[in-house]
Amino acid sequence: MPVIKSAKKKLRQDKKRQKANNLLRAVFKNAIKEAQRKKTAEKIRKAVSLVDKAVKKGLIHKNKAARIKSRLSKLVKLTVKVKNTTKSAPKKSASKAKK
Image (cartoon, rainbow, N blue to C red; front, side, top):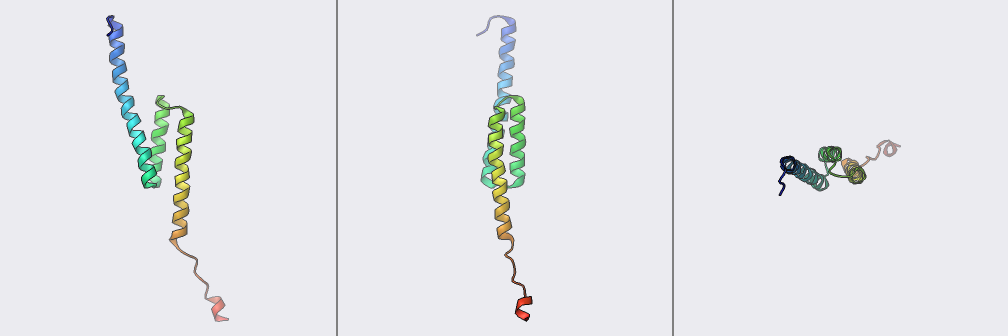
């Protein structure tokens, strides 16, 4: 344990910052998991935003954030493809049948 007054203060500050960082880390990890499970555009957008905030705070490296965001963007592309293929099948035109 620190003895000097300034060291005690530094320890208090570090504990306070550690709580805030752990909370932010937990929130962004949960957001990533939720986005991977549900795969909605809104969930993915929120996860990307939280990843950017974690980088800004220095919790994760920018390359790791880029890797996470890349994986999340792939999920967006997959969901868009699935939605487009399941929406409607092209209808056969009746003009050929009339001839």
